[in-house]
Amino acid sequence: MDFRLTEEQEALRESVRDFARDVVAPVIAEHYERHTFPYEVIRQMGKMGLFGLPFPEDYGGMGGDYFALCLALEELARVDSSVAITLEAAVSLGAMPIYRFGTEEQKRKWLPKLLSGEALAGFGLTEPGFGSDAGGTQTRAVLDEATNEWVINGSKAFITNSGTDITVLVTVTAVTGTRPDGSKELSTIIVPSGTPGFTVAPGYSKVGWNASDTHELTFDDCRVPAENLLGEQGRGFAQFLRILDEGRIAIAALAVGLAQGCVDESVKYARERHAFGQPIGNYQAIQFKIADMEMKAHTARLAYYDAAARMTAGEPFKRQAAIAKLHASTVAVDNAREATQIHGGYGFMNEYPVARFWRDSKILEIGEGTSEVQRMIIARDLGM
Image (cartoon, rainbow, N blue to C red; front, side, top):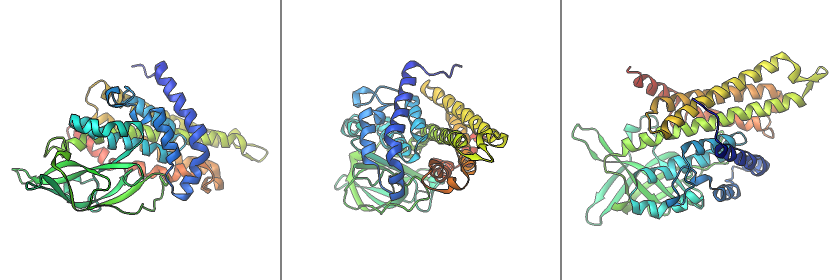
């Protein structure tokens, strides 16, 4: 199997790398420190076509594939994860459910805005009392036949891109009935921003991803038209599992970017920082740390390349996506810790990128399926 990039893929990677270095890097530290959303960066990403990368041109996309998105995410995350997760969530969790499961009318209505980067969308799955156990969903939606509207009550937690000035909708999972075996029937419903009864709480005070947008959402007799049902009623569980499988590859790519960014910054610092009369990069202890970091980033990259290749080829990829996400997130945490150690006291200062990397890395072992969930998926796919 040849993992070398095509000329087109290499050109995309280089253009995003240049953008991250020239546009994102100079401004992101201030946004991170102030916990502000980088609207000017997002607008430029939209003009580059990054939000439309894996979508057909018919809907305003770039006609690429999911691997192209992953390449862009890796390069962005080499500089900053807040910007990278904004793109990842906007595509994988915001626009992709509508593209995968929406009616033609829903696609025509929402996708052009989302794929241009003019608007963002969120995906409301996790709830305050239920994270990995999505089957424990408490949010409910009842169809009012008199008005032909869904009436939604409940809450969602940790929802990315749900409260920006350009957020236009959130797709939520809700219990819409009971199956013959007594289990919950889950469905997904589009809730436009500004709908009465839909409240976006103030942003969280987070450890990392401080320049990304994350909120708790509440729904209090929130009414939306019956046609806002996304996909088939009762197929919500299967739908979000497909979305999460794909998203894990994207998160793996983001994690690889962070891991590689740790290598980049450590090599740079090891050349500049002197101790005992010479650059610290001359010492074998530092060389071996950085060599191990590069090895880990490289192998994690191969894992997400493999998962993405299987996905784009239409082959089963659930296990490979879980492996890629599990390995890459572990590597990101490991590399962030080592990069901080190499930087010494400066690694604990927010003015250095590795401080951001350290704070941003841990969530990669939690979001879009914890490391424990990934191990469950792998074991089950092995027949256990």
